[in-house]
Length: 316
Image: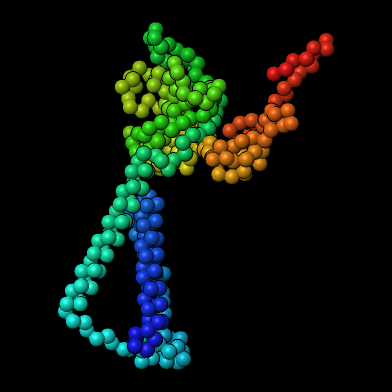
């Protein structure tokens, strides 16, 4: 009761307010990160239980579950004291203040969720650049659109290995576009392949707008060449790496490897360089050349000088 230990009463009231806002923050985090509604339900139930553990323990102590000493402590006079009822004018002011506070809290949560939802829809939380490695599968006599019409060519999937950069969204998920093999920049004249999610297939797909499985798929929105297992994942890096592949027929068991090109620590640079603003800077030799190459400094430096049999020297 406030008349017994006013300072302790104020301290306890502040702690309760802090607990309420921590619960509010935890609930906001759960809602923002959950993939399914049922996950939100279970997580909020767990949070509610944890928040009420002290109240449950207090009631059990009053019921003599934890012994006579705890019962006497929980049934002291201060816990039975009642507050005097406030005058109507003061109750009205308090009621208005509480309602305004509820509205402010609700608006803060809705604004926060709206901002996060917009960022999720734009793919801001997704990796902006990935490195992709395909198996050495070959599709003989693939149908390729060219300026001269449809031509049959052998399609080597490993040719599409390399860097893919996020470029827009499709079906609420990022679209990754193939980059030039020499400088990891956008193609200026050629059309690169794409990796995107397809609601029609309920899967992530690899596709190229100039390559079709047959003439009839020209009108398809997802003329896939590789397809992941069925998934609703928004993150390509979390998808199973065993995909289906088209080599004239649908073949399962193709390996799709994708890694994010952004680093967070030196470990992701294989300890061969430093991670600076999400980019690996590979260590340098005394001559100024890098000891290692690759986005994650994973490849040893090639030989830069070759001595010929006639005393000639070739420098790279």
